[in-house]
Image (cartoon, rainbow, N blue to C red; front, top):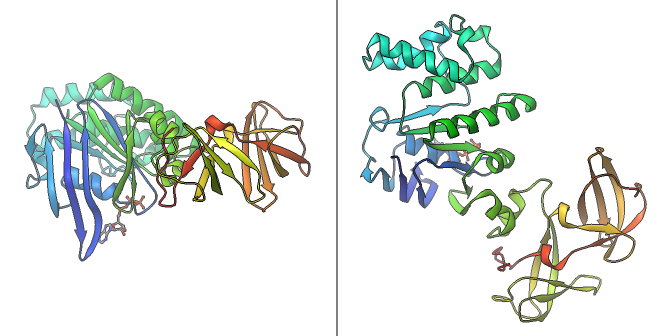
Amino acid sequence: MAVVELQNLVKDYAGFRAIHGVDLTIDDGEFCVFVGPSGCGKSTLLRMIAGLESITGGELRIDGTRVNEQRAAERGLAMVFQTYALYPHMTVRENLAFGLENIKTPKDEIKKRVDDAARMLQIEEHLTRRPKQLSGGQRQRVAIGRAVVREPKVFLFDEPLSNLDAELRVVMRGEISQLHRRLGNTMIYVTHDQVEAMTMADKIVVLKAGLIQQVGSPLDLYNRPANQFVAGFIGSPRMNFMQMTVAEIRNDAILLKDDEGRSFEAAVSPEGVAAGDTVTVGVRPEHLEIGTERGRPVTVETIEQLGGESYLYCQDQSGRPITVHLSGQTRIKAGEEAKVFLPAEAVHVFKEDGAALER
Ligand code: ATP
């Protein structure tokens, strides 16, 4: 069992509030990802859980016990760092064993745990090498192995894949997910990469300026972003945003008007808006339809044809950029005029304060 509970957690750095009262429960066995732009406080929050950063206010509980004052080593957690933090003068086996030797684990127990972890992470044949004789991916596996041998209650990962190239990141993403399935431990993972968050998480916590913006499963955040920030952060390419006016309120929809006086429907709850309000309309590139029949006139500026999918970078009559993502190939050519249609059920609507209308 390892439930991690954050209750009104606050962190101040010499007069600067980095974390503003965070409430969060991470369930036993859950893979929880903290995601957000640089400086949002995700590493600070992870380091507070790890015991590497003091807690200014609120309470941190692991399995129901307050651990605010407990030292890092007593919390039963193991952390994997972006920089791997391996000892360069030790072999892989010595690196893996070091933490266990420190806490006087019996020799044969150390050997068993190191061998098991090395097998699981496929670094058995590298046990006699030193870190500088390993590739980036192999070093990262050793760093993960060092956490595995300690058999922690909770694994903490701080941007562990940032130093790897794109291809290896995809491979390691899969391996960490597999490790989670195999061990079933609670894992908390920090990244600024929303693709990592979407592909690995059971639960995503989106942070901005030390505040939680939304907590949910990857598809919750994709389908029902709580506000414009989350909508813009989750999903790639980014959601298209356009300012519009509410023209008419209907039962379970609103009628919107754009700058050019064109009106169309959004299938959202009208609660919280009135006719005449300015709102921001958001549609994901993959939900737009492009053709010649219906919709807003655009000029197609650039096209990227990748064979299996296509990206069309367009501009509407007010000069607003609109990105369209199609699966498959398109006959449309750069420089052509086209029409982009926003299907009513694909439209997200955000009020002036950024909060989303319910869908
Ligand atoms: P990044 O992705 O860039 O690592 P982050 O989301 O992990 O960003 P943190 O490193 O947690 O962000 O930092 C949160 C805020 O706290 C930032 O504004 C940062 O400048 C500030 N901060 C972090 N560490 C300290 C410190 N030791 N002293 C003062 N301010 C700090």
